[in-house]
Structure formats: C-alpha cells, structure tokens
Length: 265
Image (tube, rainbow, N blue to C red; front, side, top):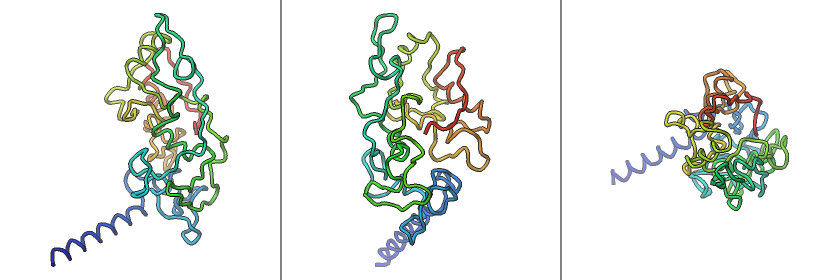
C-alpha cells in the first residue's frame, strides 16, 4: 500500500510539473518576446485574450498538444490549412510544371510530383497560420482560443503566393543536384554537409521545407534584433548569416544572394 501511495504521489507531482512547464518559457521554447509566442503572457500585438475571455496563458498549445494531435507530426495541434490550393513555384527548370530536358536530353528529375499534396510536411504546418485564412486560435480538436489583435494573419493575401518564394516541399538529393547542374552549370549546387545540416536541415524525407532556413523556436529578431526572421544561422550579422544559409546548397562561385529583403511569410 505504501508503494502505491508513493507512486501516486510521484505521478501527481510529475503531472503538476508538466502543467507548470507549459505556462513558462523553457529553453528551446518561445520566450515572451518571440513572435510565435501567442499566449496572453506575450507582449505581441497578436496574442491570446485573458483566461476569463477564453484566451490562454499556454505558449506551446498553438502548435503542440499532448492529446488530439494530428497524424502529420507528433503532438501537432494545428488543423490543415483552410486554403486547399497554394500557387506553386513557377520556375519550370526547378520543380513545377513541365520540367523540360537538360543538355543531355534527359528529363530533369526534381522528384517533385504535382499530383502529391503541396506543400507538405513542416511547410504545410507553417501555412496553417501563415496562409492568411486559417484562424490562428483554431486547434485541431475544434477548440478556438480567442485572440487579440487579429484572428488571422490577414495582412497577407488569401493564400501565400509560393510562386514568388524559394521552392519548398521537394526532395533534395544527389540526383536533383546533378539535374540542376545540367541547367545551371557544374558546381552550382551541393547537398548540405553534415555540419551544415545542423543549421540547414532537410526533413526526414530529404525534402527542403520552410524549416530548412527558419527555426520557429528561435526568433532572431527578439532581444537583440537582427533583420532575418527565425533564421537558422544567427551570429548577429545579417549579411554573413544570410549567405551562410544560402551557401549550404548554392556553391557556384558566381552565385550572389540577393541579400535579406524581409519576411517570406
């Protein structure tokens, strides 16, 4: 009996500790000045209402939940984006539409299939807020958190125009590098090295996603702000940090990044 009482007490203590941990910023979790902290603790313009008005003081709940999660990713609490179709990247030599042929007469292999869900993976999760349509406070279990400032990211069009952004949600493997080099010249592309993959990771299916360049948990504009949003490389120098992420895949000596020009989303 004593063992059961001790086990019960430890279980209650663990649950209480877990509950508290959701309410305070932790290492690796958005802090109070992080733009992805939408709790009512935040100082952001867009944030949850007070608890009395059906808001929340929880930081993680907008993206993660221990229950009623979606199958897209472990503990993911967001619904599928309300916008079912997103404009896709328009360069026919890279991933969209008719891929054309390289100088050897071979069809370019981007391993991108327009019949598949697009975008997919982590990028689709990002767009469950950033599509400009899906309610920020809407969770996968149909719970709605009441918000201050805005209910959607309505500063954007009804759907993010992915034709004007870097291509995402495509498999990036050695065969793709070979085909890209057939169009753009030898040595123009590389796969991220083991060291670079820490800062510019492809997803578990070797796909390039929003999270290849952006870390949603580290707001590089918070605290000592820099110009690059949630940037994977963060030494505080916009130009070198921007180039470092680009250089993980673009190796052509003649390649010159356009430089940081603001948010994609």
